[in-house]
Image (tube, rainbow, N blue to C red; front, top):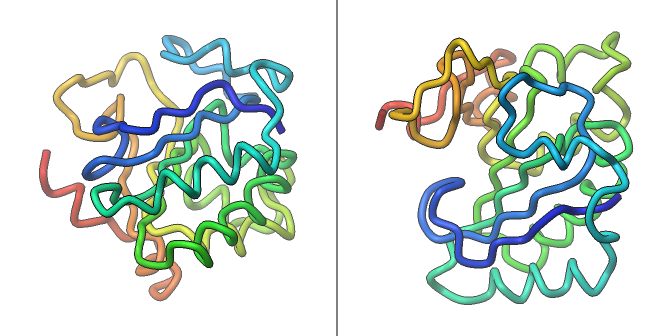
Length: 178
């Protein structure tokens, strides 16, 4: 997997001060995407152990509330293969930090075992490790700059643990702050 960018003091992509990883590779190709260069899976730099270590070090400071993973598309099948072990490393190293992931895939698509575009043996284990999922493709006609943590009104901010527990998408409390 390649990555496009890392922001170590990001306050725009999730609650509080965070480290944000922008992965490369996306097949959605949403019209009006703010990060279209990341559609190419080869864009950016290789995501290696040194990069993982630097991200984990950044999460050790007390003012950093957690990790945000955006794209590109974190739930593209090849990206899941690289991200699942990394997310597990983050959980082991800093278990009290929260993890947010943005995906153009919806909860329903990700949890559908028949959806071979985004569902693999890594999908549910990856979901089980994250706290918040911002789901749904960016829709230019529903763009709304007043929304927190998402670009278009169709996108949802989901509490992943509660969604897994209930077996259906459950909105996060962050959704209520728009």
